[in-house]
Length: 325
Image (cartoon, rainbow, N blue to C red; front, top):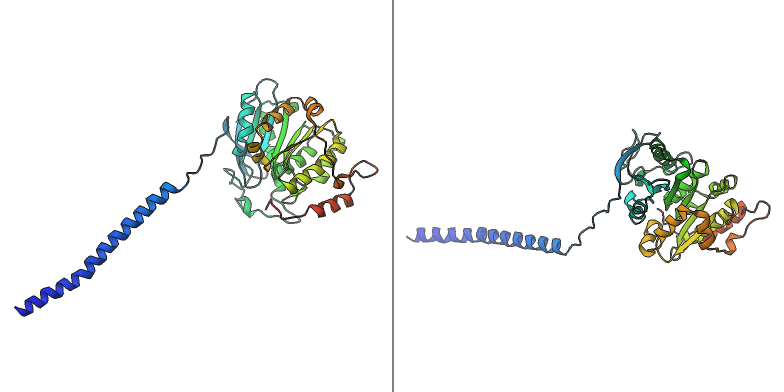
């Protein structure tokens, strides 16, 4: 009898820790589940990506990249733009401008640059993502993005878009790439640039904008007052543009805040201004041109353009953290 009682007591003692552990596990799981539900309820929901009006298209560059884009056909005799987003961006960054373009009958091709968005389909032995791109003295994948523009231009040519209706629009590094592409492609009749710089990812613009002296076309430069480094550089490029294409063809717009396509968020009138400029650059420039000058923007003697030493001195003063990295 005593042995049976002792056995029962021992069984009870052995069962208690197991039951306690089971109850503790249940409690822990319950708390974890409750915490997960609470976190899910409190976590901010990511906004869905706003899709551009138009149809999805595929482009193939000559150097083997498959690019995804959006094509919006233009109305009769309306401008057609190739829209180039900034570094680490995507084509949907142009949404604020694109839907207004569609409403006014403008056409466009907006695509994801190689290594960005849905365009991560490289040729063999090439990195698929922009943050792994190689930049050295003999090779720069960012500079090669001009081939992406060429693929979009070929697409529009196949669609029967007249060359005289074509325009390039670029943001951030896309502005630099647009400027360099149009400098050597005479079929491009106008360029607008949001937050261009002297140097993005070793895509340089000074010599490119000097080439416009041989083929003066309308150039619109947009910058923001709080974007200090890039505003100063954009003003310098604007001054060179005036000397290259003439004051009547160069226009500068300054908004309060933002960088690249983000300027649309702080300046609700900017998209309309760009479209007005695209329809009639000369009339727009005559009415709204903003003329700014700084000590760094003194024209050199001779051809009216800043000398290399002038530009080097100006750039030294502008040096700061590379925000494009």
